[in-house]
Length: 305
Image (cartoon, rainbow, N blue to C red; front, side, top):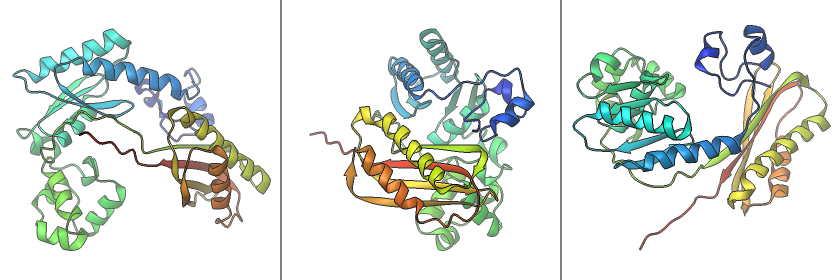
């Protein structure tokens, strides 16, 4: 079992997501450890989003715990203060607000605002704040892309912003190359849109206190993870289109196998059978430290006429 997330107070003791619970307890024996409760998180999320929709702004929900608010105001800081106060009054939850003139800048500003603060990142201070940061600091550039950029001699946001679009397109593709550079410039002016957020996938995984070696036990754990996942999603009527199984061995060597189902299904039994079939694709010759199952949903298609 590992830590899913940690409060800022706990992080001061070295506790972070992915840390084994035993290690977290040793680092902070006085910490409060809570089990995962997706239903409670979803209820709290709905309350927060309802509060945000009460403002004279376009609200774009981006996940359980984040949203964009599109608003034109002469005093963005006071608007942010009002948002934080309303969320606290209505839900008892603290929040962080990032102010930006693009989605990229607003998203990154929120990171600087944590915990429970307000930060403004716009064209005026973008270079001062971001220029010398690594490319991975940008929203939309992960470790793999950052590594590829580094291989090309591009390490900082400033270097990426100064790179030629043609060179980036040739090296990283006609769409992604120039887009990565646009991120380094602060992102584009994509509008905030009022559309419901619908999760595209759900996953569960567990790290074992003692590595598993018995195949029947490994099978049982995968089935249990699949059942728990389907219990979570069965009430919303979503159908599963793809199933993935993740295996991490005692050497920390990790692999994921993915299967597209013959047809989207809401049936837990279909997902369990697919997960076991995926497990057969692994060469399990070493002890297993972690198992995970992910389901990817059939796309939700809507039409307004």
